[in-house]
Length: 143
Image 1 (cartoon, rainbow, N blue to C red):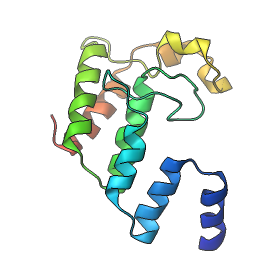
Image 2 (tube, rainbow, N blue to C red; image 1 turned 135 degrees about the horizontal axis):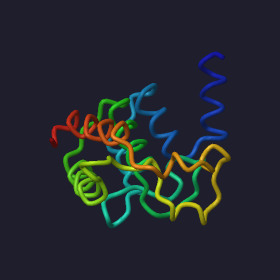
Image 3 (tube, rainbow, N blue to C red; image 1 turned 180 degrees about the vertical axis):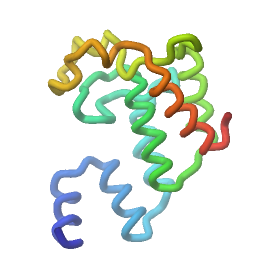
């Protein structure tokens, strides 16, 4: 796929977040536009929701959405202390130091989601998920 076709696909099918990332990475756009688009998905509890990752339509905060948000910042080489501090508080509230943190919470089952989220492993706490989140927060300079 060439650049023009990729760009057309983003402008035709992408959400505002994907468009802002595209502008930032390929067209010299502002990192603040990426941040403001991402923050629109951040809930009062510091987590992220509202189908940030479209395969799960839950409005409430989910650890998977948190990883998606932090990974987006990492991939774009954007650091933001305010967002990361809120994320850290959310993770601290929901992580179990003996078990980890689940990918998604059982409460997400009441919302539309892709077939691959219909398994019990997604709601089981995982150290792999927790260490990934901690690593992304460390990159942000928080931990």
